[in-house]
Image 1 (tube, rainbow, N blue to C red):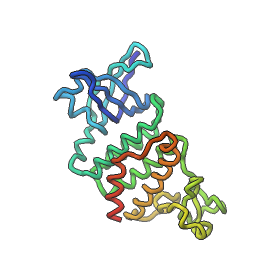
Image 2: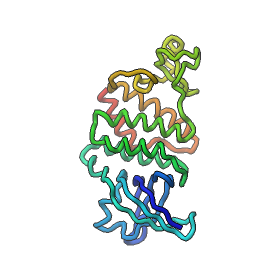
Image 3: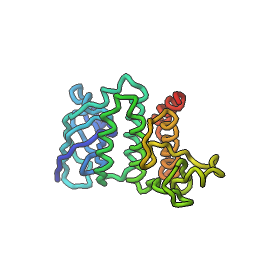
Image 4: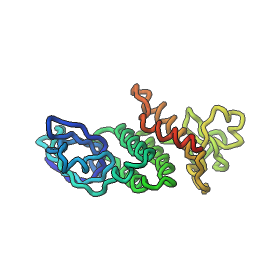
Length: 241
């Protein structure tokens, strides 16, 4: 069996003396691994970096086998963030969280969003807000999307400023006022129909929102925690706010 696809490198681990096992997030085949002969060579080392966009050709006798994979670089996103600690941590976190997806289960919409975020990792004024939206999209793909269209208490679509930490539904300012200390803040850039400049506080609140639901709904039931890399860059962004 064989297939050709494009993908983003999620992880690389040594195999034997010269090979490497590479895990990809592909457009049409989802999260998929393969053995790369000579993957630890000087020639392939720059290609096999987390976050790089590659063309992949996979071959195996049976579909359930690890199989062998050959890769060609499309765009080296990893190199563009090597000197930016926050962006590098963001890239590492995104790669780690993508591995929450089931193996070999296509998620083409999230794949497109992933490429879009990667293309802006060299712009610190843009990528944090895009990363929040990416985590929102990941929650949706995992079956835990948030309902931010209308107030959970009144059904109103106006003045949505909170999110219930239990239901994941939006709450209006008036309905949420008595419980404001127990609710999560909904940043304006995530509320439908609202347009406003994105502030550092909005970014902080956005990551607090997505981090809560990733932790409670996805990671904790698996006995897992949020990536350390995510904690590093969100801490920096929090100090800036």
